[in-house]
Picture 1 (tube, one colour):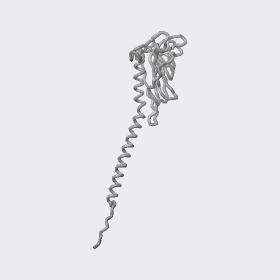
Picture 2: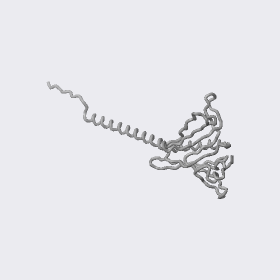
Picture 3: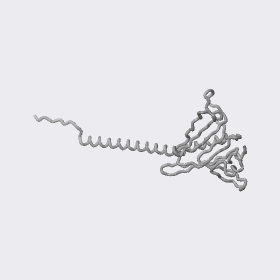
Picture 4: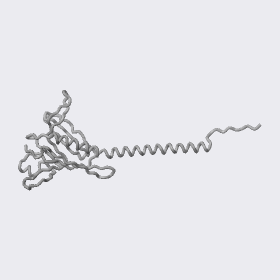
Length: 207
């Protein structure tokens, strides 16, 4: 009587099917990971554009709530500007409270970010003042300019400092007619510039 030998293991067909299934699963996982990385990259690279819109909205609100106060001028240069305005501040006893203070927007080239600091007038002479809050990061550059009417030249001009030289010579204290904010950032290796001009309701009012 001939005994049959029993062999354990996979057949060639089974090995081929298993290899094909592993290949399909590997391709699917690779495509999933690649798409996830692309989405993550797009979201993180396009965030400066969304942050810029929020920044412009915040500046617009502060300028709309600007207050002309004697002895507290509008001051600005190419990288920063500050002025008095009405804003909400956090008070430990009463939570948020609305009051008059001074807001400062400034570009930090080392950190490549734009910060906002608001200090109410009760805190101006305090030892500890509120820290500046970062509003937008990954900014390559910023350019600020100020619109005004030059009475000597009888023309509307832009200046990269405020007060401009013409006003400084006359010891004239007033707000600009408009403020133009231009920021430069990089997305996917492409340099993009986004800007906005803000008209000031109390522009040219002398203190």
